[in-house]
Length: 272
Image (tube, rainbow, N blue to C red):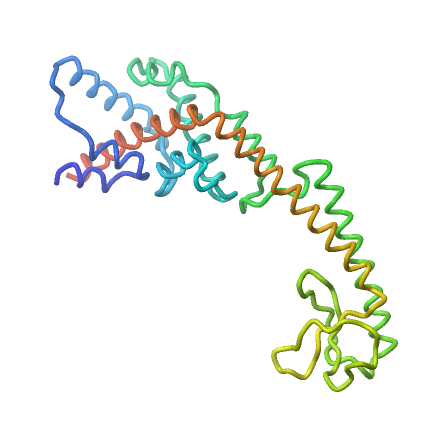
């Protein structure tokens, strides 16, 4: 019950797990080590906490990175990037302390710098966890190709709709099934050559693809498919690189867990 109370003060599930698994020190040297780390953490956090609010579920993400089952999504990769960045910043603060924090410094002495990996994630993913449009030269070129194809299609469909205004049911150019088309009044079916892709919610209009833009829509769909394929390739490569660094990620998770546990203990100490 006491450990559960301490764990409730943790900012991450990593710190909560450390606190829930604590056992009394069996040797005086171990007790001295724990007390020293507690005192050092208090010195380190005079200006700001070592562990920001990173949320729950981090332990599961670390495990899934190593196993690949199921693969991490972009937003989940960003959460691991936050863990790595926080661990790297905490390790740097510990290393800079003067006088030194001997006990905590020993915990970070052999840790590799996670910043190259954090920067790589930032080059591939945006703040929403989506693959950035400029993540690779090929992706940027495909994005321009898709944009150009869409603009040409919009122009063609606007011209067709303008020339047959009496047949148009709605002044919009919707996308359906990845294809741009016109909205034609249901009663005007067959008056233009083309393909019908379904009815509107009201049933008064048809999703209509004029025959003369079918090939351009095929080109657009092909470009969109290639664009999505490049996005998936980049995401797969990023996951592969991250998985290769899973020992570092696990080390950073261990560091964050221990620091979070120390800070949670100090928060509860202040409260009582």
